[in-house]
Amino acid sequence: MSRTVTIEPVTRIEGHARITLQLGDQGEVQDACFHLTQFRGFEKFCEGRPYREMPALTARTCGICPVSHVLASNKACDYLLSVTIPPTAEKLRRIINLAQITQSHALSFFHLSSPDLLLGWDSAPASRNIFGVMRQDPALARDGIRLRQIGQTIIETLGGKKIHPTWVVPGGVSEALTLEKRETMLKMMPEGLEIAKRTYAFFKTLVPKFKDEASNFGTQDTMFLSLVSPEGNLEHYDGFLRIKDARGHIVEDMVPTWEYERLVGEAVEDFSYMKFPYYKPIGYPQGIYRVGPLARLNNADSCGTPYADVALAEFHMLQESGPIASSFHYHYARLVEIIYAIEMMERLLKDPDILDRRVRARARSNRDEGIGVSEAPRGTLMHHYKIDDDGLVTSVNLIIATGHNNLAMNAAIRQVADAYVDGNNLQEGMLNRVEAVIRCYDPCLSCASHAFGEMPLVIEIKDATGQVVNRLRRG
Image 1 (spheres, one colour):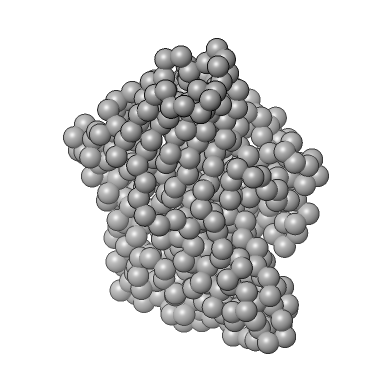
Image 2 (image 1 turned 180 degrees about the horizontal axis):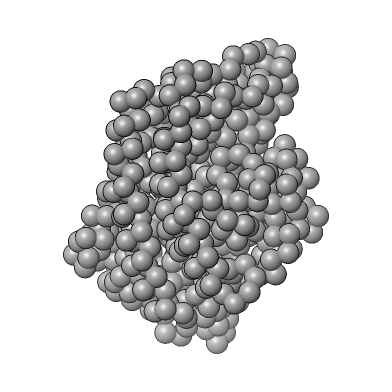
């Protein structure tokens, strides 16, 4: 007798979604779907607005990673202006982006995912959270809070506020860095790096304990998409698009970001409001790829900072050959990127030109189309605008990092469900593992949709007639 298991909402992610598992007559998993249930309307209601409003408007898609949208949007506006921003402005933009990556990765690892790693997949839901982590390992919890605080303080120091800063503007930034602010940020770097290195060393001791999860958490063959620097190194702010296949062969390299439409198509399905991007030359759904920290480290030849390069070498040792395939190792990749981000912020802050007063290029619109691409914490973020002769927006396309991973997330929950879910003996811990593989991707559904309110977790098992035969409720 076939049944449907519904997990709603998926917990410890940013935003709301549900997962459905279709079970066969013998309790085996026949299908699995990740549903984003809220509608995203930003692309439509931005039409008719002056293009200079786009950074402030699109930043409101999310309160967790608004800096990422501010940067991608302003890069699209730079393109509309046909300007090259001053070198110091680019460095300052890089710093605020790296601060965003630091605080967001810290939130993902310490607050959302570490409860599973420390307390266990089968632990009680009431304690499987950051408060449980505080009781289990107070020092680790404090490190997570402090590391996120450092990232947010840098964002506030540069941008004027932690959420939705307006300091980044078309043509550069609105205000040069002062010596006092630079010294304030530099003082935090040694502590931040020490926390990042300590957490990374701790996580390495956990990795051997999760070999089974590493073998079953989203190991499907996919390509990997990210930005790389002109030298092929780790890049978060600018650069070129690179795609590697599941064997590690470069499929596309040094593709200018304004050519992204040649690479990326977008499909839709009737079970989700989130689009399904795919690699166009292969087609849908075979053109599945992943983005984010796992993809960035798989694609990068090196990081370019001392401690991060050592960590990158150790990251590649997780697998004998080829790109690191397991989505479980997104956690590992985030910790490597935190180390890199802090090292690079310190390097940029010590740059002798960082206090230069020339931080903005001014112009009117000189193109009718602008494309901005940067690396958000969760992956490659694309903003594409078209404007009319009056500078009013006529078309907007936002390809969100979480959207890029949509095909991969759906494949991952099917793999985890096949490995762990027994429909004849349903346990909370089985379903938590299905949720946990989504947490590996750290999806930001606030970016891919817009939700309001609170929803409890309800798991229902129904028989073929639709009758509820079992129900688990959380919240």
